[in-house]
Image (cartoon, rainbow, N blue to C red; front, side, top):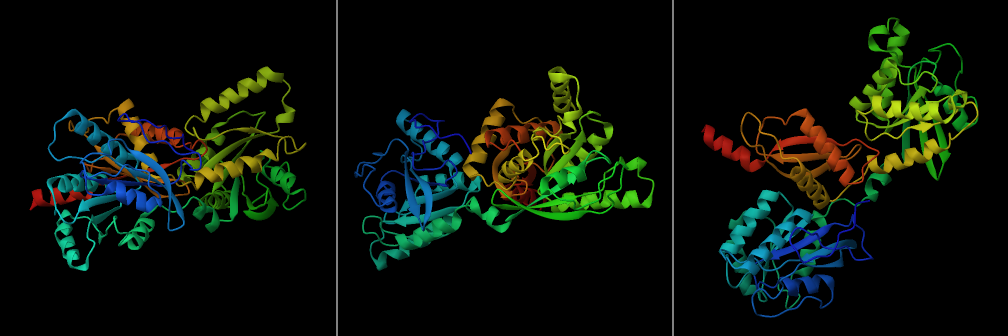
Amino acid sequence: MGHPRRMSSAPGCPPSVPPEMSVTDPVVVLMGAPNVGKSTLFNRLRGGRRALVHPQPGMTRDRLSRPAIIEERRVLLVDTGGVIHGSGDAMSALIRDQSHEALVEADVVVLVVDGRAGCSGTDRDLSRLIHRRGLPVIVAVNKLDTERLEIHTSEFHELGLEPVLSVSAAHGLGLQELRKQIAACLPAPLTAAREEAPELSLALIGRPNVGKSSLLNRLVNEERVIVSDQPGTTRDSIDTLLHAHQRTFRLVDTAGLRRRESAADTAESLAIAQARHALARAQIAVLVMDAQAGVTVGDLAVAGEAMDAGRAVIPVLNKWDLLTGGEDEARALLEEVDNRLSFLPYSRPLTVSALTGLRVRNLLKEALLSEEEFMAIRPTAAWNRALQSAMKERRTPLVENRPYRIRYAVQTGTGPPRVTLFVNRQTPLPPPYMRFLAGRLRLALDLTRTPIRLHLKLRQAERKRRRSADA
């Protein structure tokens, strides 16, 4: 779970999450010029009268955050101060800063405009700002309390944002459709991924003779596959179903992978192919290693296969009971694992003995924790907060002596979490900076047991600009 939002009226500080809220609840932000009716609409959507409503422009100066239920979904509703086009006074600047900060946190934006007054310079400024963020947006044309006034919605289509809805916050008109549109824009609930994948698949991978089959047998407490001291006697991938912790686990025991250059015989080559196939259809890779041998070159090669497949990885040091060097040997071995598997910063090693059963049951618990993060959905606002923080810590490098800008981030998939970064250049960022970003995003979003995949995409506005320049 993410860190709670802390309440503050200062720019740069996100709003707090009330005790009854979760940090993963989506954020719906109301934005608009002063006196367009944001606070009245805020109160209508919440079903209460909390925000101060007054005809004087700019009465809502601080961001007000309250929980609300939108079409049976719990959200954090944020009412921003009124942004004034072209105003240079200090208070207006503060309100603009807070509104910009609210956009960083938003999952959905409701741009509230005054249908009676018509499209203003502030409306156009805000529409451009929202468009740059690439967030789902609904234009709520307020103060249209009679059918004859609904014709006034037409001029707001020029903002280039859809849908455009006519509402009257004062009279409660059009709110049902507004709620439906907000709900349609919300990110999928966190439970969706779990419901689609009730079975958790673990691929037991590793060099020959490290104890993969023995570990599987210990887990299921019965002989399901051949166990032998001869390396590579398990040639096929065998699926075993195990019910534990109110879940069904699919355990895939593969032939031991040898380094590619040493896979000379056909059966061994087939075993490697089967292991890669198992990684492709598993969520978690259980990397089994021989504690007595330490981390070998072969172990690193197998770990590289799991990394390339984008799986969550649990390194398992088997035969821990055979170590004789006491705490000093154990400490040195764990340091070796950390150092040599540093390219898997999301992995947490377990020390077990398949022979005695030492800590074997911890493997399934760790797999459940890894799955939760592997299939996690985080709010768009949280990704963008983390992205802004990372770029403040280390600015994007110059690419071909030109500035490189990352506009915003959107999660586009799970298993593992996949994030699209919308950028201003077609040229890729240097791999070290991409690794830095991935690491900072994982830590900020509490994704410490799973990799994340970052994808760069040229923003649509940049593509249009390039096409115009080429024409």
